[in-house]
Image (tube, rainbow, N blue to C red; front, side, top):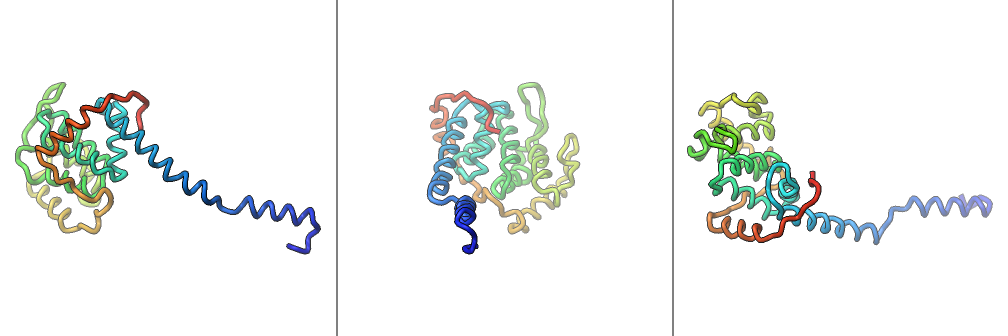
Length: 210
């Protein structure tokens, strides 16, 4: 290349410089942009909750990103809310978050607690037991285990099927060990404090984060 005439040599040098990867500015800007995006999502997550709101989407995105507090909020809604719709929506959120922590929490709803196996009342009438909603989400997250037909109502699983699926989840840790990983260890007291903290945040209006 260096036997080229001066004009062509200059053009070659310019081409090399243009093709070199950017360093310094771009590498430092990426974390700043990620932090700004996370802060924006946390502001949105403080708004009114609901399937059609930006708070719903922001909470799910943050939980996917490993924000422990957001996953704790969802689990608190599921375990300790007195509202059947809120509990059902928390199950739906876990299905959208996915990962090992969500699968284990949904498996607990499906298998461990008989209180989740009774019909519930929603804003619009009666709804299926929460256990059926957990099976519905697990059928999406674990299609290799739960037949896809269980993703739709009114197909109900037998106790034998539920026990078999639960045992598979406990015995195949490595196959489902994807983020978020840690199931929140929450109590009624800690959930009350967390709910109080987030209820103090002013609503933030804006487009859906999804």
